Image (tube, rainbow, N blue to C red; front, side):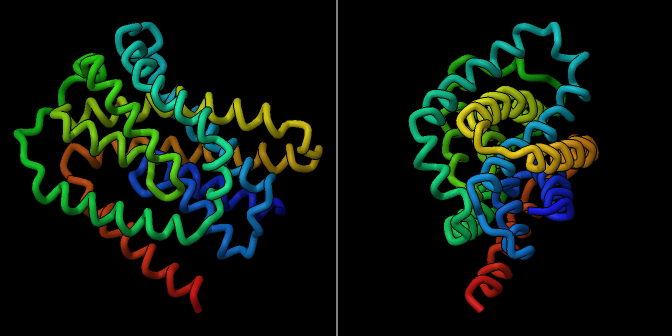
Length: 256
């Protein structure tokens, strides 16, 4: 990996982390286009720089949630099932992070699911409200379902938002819940991966991590603001179609 690779992946991560299109999947596919092998460092890089994107949420929402212990409590409850399952299946999931075929199938099927769900999903949308409207039982359910996003290409934000909508949670509330839950989830995932692989990083690789981290943070700020405005007037169907198009295009690229 070089500086350009790190910069491209940082930008891709920042743009895609909070959109329902899978940031990990996009980073792996971007690496494929750059002919960047999925080494152990690259796998760790793709996990660790997500913390840069997560920092964008902290910067944008800290005033709102820093002292709102009820909302933070709901996010922590939702994280517990994910944390347990993530710890148990860490080694298994890591083996499949760079598997393009798993990612493409996940993008394709996930896209179809989003389109079908949004087609049949009907409600009188209420955009007011925040995470506090989510019950503890719903939070646990969201956490369990978020664990499915350990599969590369599934998209953590997509599965948390869609599952929340299916439970009757207002769109704005579940999107904000997805943001805050991402902070806790990725802090844990990044910290665990960094602890596991810290001794294998060289000084030059820390420079690459810094570049990816900074660029993912900057681009994620714009992506989060875009997402908040987008959900006020649109469904997620466009993201579903996008996932399908990307999956089909890359399928031809990989199989050529």
